[in-house]
Length: 202
Image (cartoon, rainbow, N blue to C red; front, top):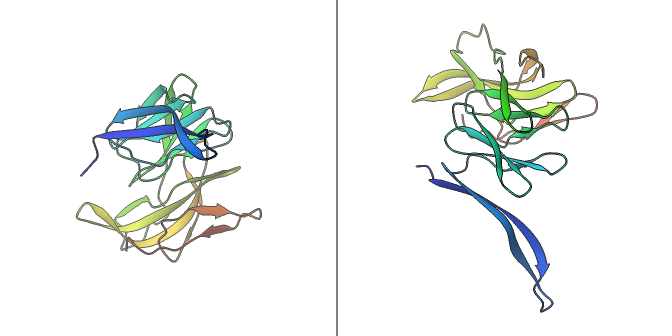
């Protein structure tokens, strides 16, 4: 059920000499394990991050040459969040939010998030990541799902939004929400969180 090879291409839109435009392949990179996420770019465009189905976060340079890879233990379920500062990356799996630091010639795994927003709920046996992370100036916005394990998956009986500490991964604030989402969380200038509801997993 998984692809064997992942691939990414760098394309340029060029004049074909007949007054029309065509795509020209500048570079390409293939890797074992298939693809696990949409590509993500650093703010300066010099670094590209992808993942494979084996749980590796892979950093490529602007010519799509591999610079480093880090094993986070399980496949990613969304794009890697690239912070515009501090060289921080946030990889989201079905269960966790993991911070990595791009050290230039290697990547370093620093913490796995503390997902405990539903501690004390009688009908919550497991708590998992439920959305791609959003890096902000004062933390990392996440969605936590809480519920029961069923056939290897988490049946999310509750969902909520939280803010992780960027230095430690500990949960700073949390509020229960109303519905699941497969979108992205957006943070307004006043700190309000906006998220589209897409109740597919419940």
